[in-house]
Length: 319
Image (tube, rainbow, N blue to C red):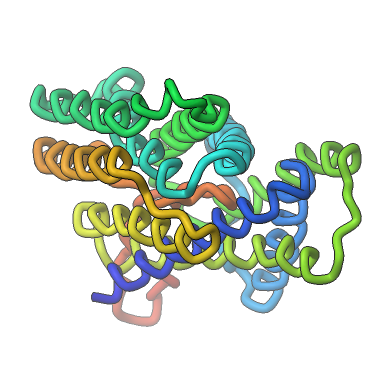
């Protein structure tokens, strides 16, 4: 049970990251919040690498283009989810986010030319129908369309990240999902933070820095989970983010999900599970846990090699 326990712990940290960011979004800009997240995360990663040489995997890569695409998608995902959750309850945003496995499946079929069973496509449509079931009743009542649009863009970017992860399975390690995105994030969001900087009182400053700890911890826990269990086993645990988000909405904002959100959530979760079952003989994507925030939507799926016995035994790869 170590793999599922680590995955659930990672989901809780990602959910807390989203809740904390949502709480800060009313006072601080997207640039300031995400810049300070990386300003904490990157030094922590470098300190860990100094304390344990080689921590996070090798720095060089033979596929810089794919890494660049992934980093760009992670930047879009981080900003989009922040802007989306500024307007939406966590549960409603996560419901849209749970379409990520369907989008990843579509990208894998279109871009990677992977075969997808017809039943999986049917369940994919059912999943999007669940989202419409939840969102449609709100559209006529002044629903924050910008919030839904931002979360949808973030979900698309996350699906791109997951698709690229499949091509980078041979390059495991946290460098690609923490260090490089963190450095780029400082460059991208630094000027935005400077432009919109708002002096923060000590408590808010601590919360802004906490985002870096939550993001880093969530990515490390998720990576550790995939070292102890495969994606087929861990995938369903990603849906734990929905009840966690409901609990956080209730705890911090006193908001219960409405009947349409509950009904849509049931449809989306059921469709995701059935879609995974339909394509299990040739897995294409996994149920997603909100990893956005390093913004890592999750590390490449990688099984740790078994160390060789004898004096030449090497150190297992780190993810």
